[in-house]
Amino acid sequence: MSSAVASIVDMNLKAAMERIAGEIDEGFDRLLAVPDDGRARLYEAMRHAAIGGGKRLRPLLVAAGCNLFRVDRGSAIRVGLAIEAIHVYSLIHDDMPCMDDDDMRRGKPTVHRLYDEATAVLAGDSLHALAFEWLVDPATHADPFVRADLVAEIARASGPAGMAGGQMMDLAAEDASFDLTGVTRLQQLKTGALIGACLESAAILGHVPPEGRRPLRGYARDIGLAFQIADDLLDVEGDAEAAGKAVGKDAAAGKATFVSLLGVERARTQAAMLVEQAIGHLASFGAEADLLRQIARYIIERDR
Amino acid sequence: MSSAVASIVDMNLKAAMERIAGEIDEGFDRLLAVPDDGRARLYEAMRHAAIGGGKRLRPLLVAAGCNLFRVDRGSAIRVGLAIEAIHVYSLIHDDMPCMDDDDMRRGKPTVHRLYDEATAVLAGDSLHALAFEWLVDPATHADPFVRADLVAEIARASGPAGMAGGQMMDLAAEDASFDLTGVTRLQQLKTGALIGACLESAAILGHVPPEGRRPLRGYARDIGLAFQIADDLLDVEGDAEAAGKAVGKDAAAGKATFVSLLGVERARTQAAMLVEQAIGHLASFGAEADLLRQIARYIIERDR
View: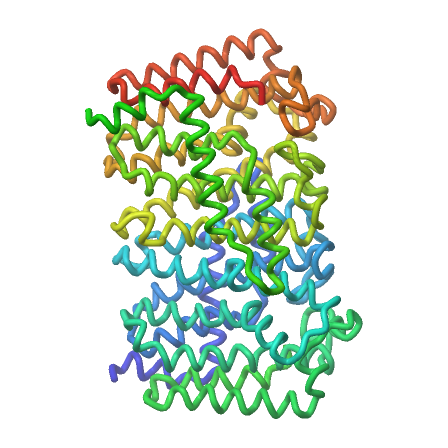
């Protein structure tokens, strides 16, 4: 292992999270420069939503996955920015009154509250388009096959067969009587698909052929579900101030969640089991996968 | 010229429009098959907005541009479907109550009226993601450079530096006192950028290097402005039934438009001049550009 790689995996999780948070904020700051015309408000709204705050879990997963294959850090950060832009656009739209109707996000007013609903729609749409523009920029990767594959993976994971489809099922969940299979399927689309795309993108950047991606796919599937169970637990037990958003909303809406179906104790056990299973998928990797192992544990220990 | 190309350019505009309308409807029908799960409503909403109706001007421009470079019809149609999906997503979002608040579109109820606002947000977001997924599919073009270039062009034209940015400026236009330069700039972003992307995509598919695209870019810029002036004239003089949507909205909102700034007569003269100028840009092409010439004339003669 090169000393550069060793120094990255030696950093503890906290340092890795601080590092990626700085890189993502710097990247958004650079890529979302406010123009001096009638679009200034649009860019200010995008900056409000994208810069500062958030766990940056998705870019962290891209970067940690890229550690396995010695991918150039610049490529990893650009892909992390694109996936985070997709995540942020989905938060802006999901927070709107016609969807989850949230006033606070990441400890700040939501975009439609600070600006207005029209600006929220357009800021989300703009980040959505920019994500794909950034991905296909030669600065992301010299190989056009890689750039096209990244777009294919991230578009699929965020569209109706992934995130947007899961959000649609979630809206229906208030009426429908979902069982555990139904909630699992819903969450695999709503949050799991984009988390999976983080690891899949790392494999694409690392020129890993599809047949070699099985461990990473297993890891992604397991932490994706663990992440959602932890989210459901935080919604029940969490603190709105630490979360930076409203809590207790699922129960109030009568939604079927992992916690409503399993109960708190079994949900917590299930999440811990999934994390161990996720780490098990990484058995063929050495210390270069330590950051992925730490992220898996963090996912169920976080307080937001 | 091959006989296949000759037969295409010999068809009159009406036949070309009917042909492309059938191909686009068939393509959406195939690509938007309704899944048997909680996402059925999302797909039905996308199908409602995407299938049937609309002039299909953008796919027609892609196909007519592709005639110049003997691009495979299948590639042209797939790119036309992607750009039309972007156009349809923008209509769904723009029609929402927080934006233009329209009840009718293409002679049918708008998505948020027939379904609900949350479904409208997600149907738009889903078509947006699918457009990029379709573009990078190898079925669109074998060359990944071409696929990545198409994504770059269409993402730029539809994002904050294009369509979404123009829509933001348009929302501000009700307060602002725009002059002719301001309205021209706004419309070049709001509608001109995506119309430009249709011709630019044809050039990308035809492997035309950027320095060879000047005639097509001039043509696109001129018909884009003529199209918007014609739209403004239809909003003043048009018939809601023929248009399939409400008319007279700009004046009611006190918006600066080409017609409010130039008056009806000068606006009509300006549009006719732009069309002749657009056709002038095609002087180096022969009969293979006849469809583009016919489209330019149609743009100011249409009644919807």
